[in-house]
Image 1 (cartoon, helix red, strand yellow):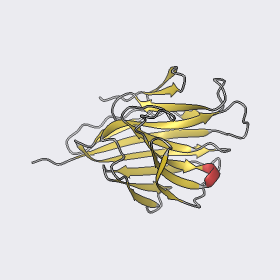
Image 2: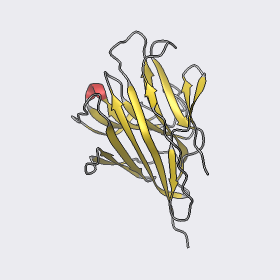
Image 3: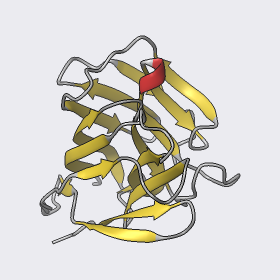
Length: 206
């Protein structure tokens, strides 16, 4: 059984094990592995104002030299100005590091926007404007990625957006969630994730 363990890595280098929080599925000849998912929660943290928390898979979660498609599903709920943010990275370097290779896909609450960015948050790849999620309610997200594009579904609706990735997605990488902590901002709120699942569809070889 292939087990993925997530860990939280703070900007200042400390980390904490959150336990087995993801379900990994393989298709076309792989054996499936189920990991019971506990809830991941981001909120105000005593570590200091403006701290970002990164929760990454501890092992490579996709490899497009072998995978034809990667499907990520999860449920998320937010309050305040907290965001729903998923990241794909090979080097897992944080925001502000000039060498970060992360592509991020998520919901920016203050702008009511679904965003796809490269360099963690540095540059825009694509977006959906004027998209509203209900605060405090669980929403189901499904992302289907190939090496060249991504399709986003929210709450089982038809795809809300398909975008090219234009060579920005690392060929192999880790998958993670990003949250924000700010002890001086009581309006920041909380982001919660559960029912996380990764499915890797492999290329057919003859």
